[in-house]
Length: 484
Ligand code: GBH
Image 1 (cartoon, rainbow, N blue to C red):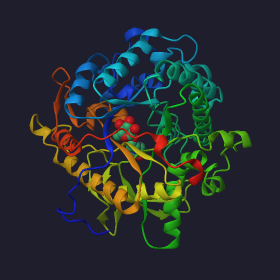
Image 2: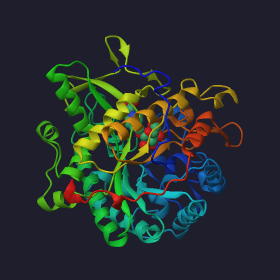
Image 3: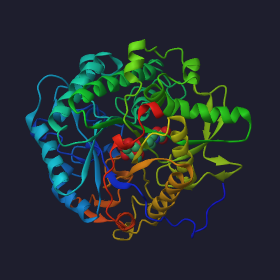
Image 4: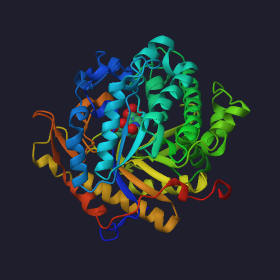
């Protein structure tokens, strides 16, 4: 693909709403406040050698105590939506059983403060912080018991917040927490079964078992949602890298498709189309089958498509490698696919965003798409001096170029994008990378009282999206299911 010139890159006013995203363990801190229970991320980050410099989320960026000021800042930027996750162990310290009133009260106050500021809350139920009690009791997501436990937790949240929250998702990026947490072992709960990565594999079946349980937990929660919050909209946040065939050979084209099947289709196909992709079934004998009732409960269990997207890869056929028989590359003929961000896995590939959006549009029946995460860290940002660090030109260009491609997807490919969330509002606890990677559009001064300072990218997005007030669209505006 030809690189567009500067003038073509200009983004005219987007036709969709904008917001910013966050996640409980990454921002809240207050790990012992108000009766919060422990999560698997507390355990993991407090285990030696698991995170950069042994960083953990005990304090994080103290959002738990500073949410009012942070909301005022969002309001002043003209931000229309805020995506956050609920910490399961704040609501149910033991995962099931006793509800912690103070935990419920915190999210209730947060939601009220957002609504008072004219900001629509988008709530994610699970952004990776499983109650440790459930890990201890029955092995967490490895057990079918997790399905009922999650549905029970979801029900508490629907009853407590469903009167004010219209947009929900069940899980954030199942692929990430499953294949990093149970394959590579570098995220909680740190179980390593990927023979490519681990010296001693534990059980190579685990990621597939967890995949199945998580999908069924999603379906169970959605069923209760539809009874309890009939006018709300619910989905699941799915991440994908665009997969561009390394060469024009048929083998590489098929491998690129399989890469998408193994990252995105493995979740999206059962939910939007009714079963796992055939390529996954063929290559993974350990993947459990759905009963006809389970398949039926999954199909149609999302009111909109919630897509997280950061980067793209070239993909080639590889007989020997992973079950997907697809190898990913950052270069073609010695030339990088895009500009390198601070995180090694992240390269800026704006055209990949458009291709992915169009792919989702075509494959999944022209759903409403909400981009629930998009963003980057900027090279060298971690140790750049203050205040020069606030001039995050790399991130401004990233947003400018990605949004320009999203606009092309809307105008030229007919993609139905309803909303766009920048990841993230604040620098925060970047999982295994601790505080060494910064994805915020707002800088957090870790050496000076966690003070917040706007980066250039925050000002850029605020100016871009403030062009005119836009009505909040609802999922029910979309085509009836029969039309799909
Ligand atoms: C999102 O995941 C998360 O939802 C969010 O919490 C996080 O802060 C944000 O991205 C930024 O990372 O080196 O092979 O282990 C993004 C998708 C997929 C990115 C897995 C990191 C790890 C690649 N993630 N990837 S690897």
